[in-house]
Length: 462
Image (cartoon, rainbow, N blue to C red; front, side):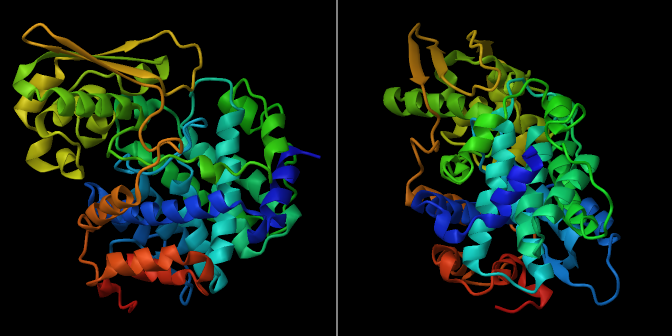
């Protein structure tokens, strides 16, 4: 049996009752978190241009339209999924599976909710199951890799997870979903060049793969003969996109190990690779009471992936996307304010000369770890002007499943995100979304989530 067949069987045959309690709980946590982050992403620079382009991808008259979160518009399902996926990842604030280094929910949830709209509704229990199997496949592909990034894995692997979730909700059978995986391979895209340059195209690559997932599911219904060895063939996904891989342990874990329960929050709105450095500075600052003016220099000693992803030099002219992936910038803002906020990547805050003067004192160094996908441990050493060297070491980053956010921290992040909606949300939206997701497995129709996440100007009602 091919890997596509085994993934399809898992995606189609899994029942809500098969999920572990932990998987259900964490699915609800990250559905709420993802909606909040996606709403906040609606006001990021560049959104108006993407909205204008995506609006031109309209469907046929009378075709079902899907809400765009934080806005008062509905678009054709692939276009809405595209925008919602971009909004989820454009601030580097969305959840991820650290071992896989895959932000799977950014593709899986927008595709699943768009599929629910196309299908005429789906229950909350069915959404949770669809999200869980989609995450299993997206994260599983990342876990199978034994190589460093060449392509942008959150987009490429995330797209296959989105196919699984959307295909299940749309009613594809096993052969149909296998064919949809083949169509997705034909469309999979996204390299690490945008990440290397800190280009705002980076999150658009997740959006492209999310839109493609809905198109793959539709194309799978039209009878084309599909490729079979989608993942393991000589030019299949894993050899071509990842290089060295070991897939069998992942396939054997399906239905036994729920990757949704292994996801990490993003407590800070920057690349996950910066989070150890941010936490270390926050802890040392709280313990020793120093201010930004007291700091001579900061060292972050971390695995090579950290240096590769966020060890870039600070650049005042590079823009928000670059800054979100810059350890030095994130630590400088944390030294200034004791925290890192969405507002620190917008407007005057992004150009603050003091931030860059502080950032020039930060160095990120390779600790020699051999695992190409390791994000931890990270060590932070703050050298003060009085000669003291203060050290912190983190073996596991904050908001990893072993160190989860509290319920209060989770909800505070969600509330802060909603304040950045591109268009005003209805009064009480935060409370309604929290209540709805808290009882998600009882919800009769998850289309209500999209209604709540949209601006009331859309005429969607409440």
